[in-house]
Image 1 (cartoon, rainbow, N blue to C red):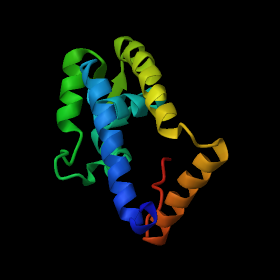
Image 2 (image 1 turned 120 degrees about the vertical axis):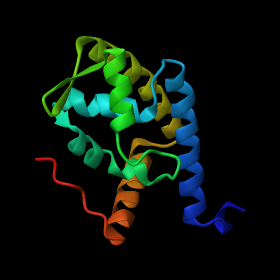
Image 3 (image 1 turned 180 degrees about the vertical axis):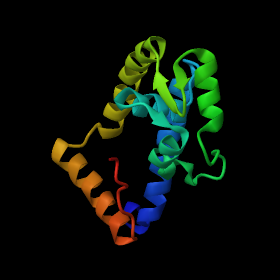
Length: 144
């Protein structure tokens, strides 16, 4: 029966299951998946709201997701996980410590997602999906 289901079915199903797993896991620690992603971006470099929105733009395709990071940033500032200096946001020590703990949880989710797949099969799957995205006109945004 699996052969009769199209690619779109599997993409939407896996995406939904990943979202559910992330939401359940991260919610227990008082953070959303987008907030975790914001922390990851700020761990690399301070960034403006516009830069963060651009960096997370693929995740704003969902109709139930805000189209910017404004609300997420406000909550992270309020929690003391990030701070604002001028137009840029920076991760705080508290945010860094939380990110380290959350990253361990995320790694468990990623490992679960790849269970039963060889590293080569997983890599091929990711590469194939990237190529499909490019076939539809997606181009990775410049980060510099």
